[in-house]
Image (cartoon, rainbow, N blue to C red):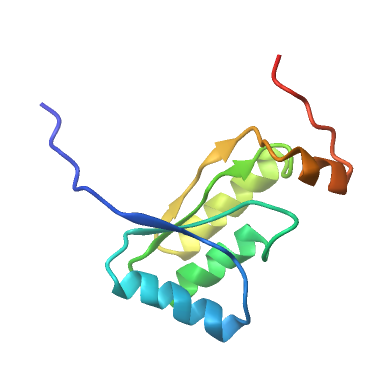
Length: 119
């Protein structure tokens, strides 16, 4: 029998604001008892999620961090894998990776990346 895993609560947040506000926000998330902070992967809003999640991990001690979700068209898989492994090592194993196909056509149009609709 597989032992049950504890129920966890995560929170999705925007990656905006000056450094001090960003660090205070993720520390508050951790202090409130959330297990995970997830950053959005969008070009038009907020800071880069990879760099933001590394900063969040460095500002906290137990909070898990991850992307909600990383768009596979925005980052080459090998580059994202390297970034994910780096965050995981430097955070002491607190990184959670989520990847997906992307959906916001406007962002594709604004960045010149081809948007492949579902068949």
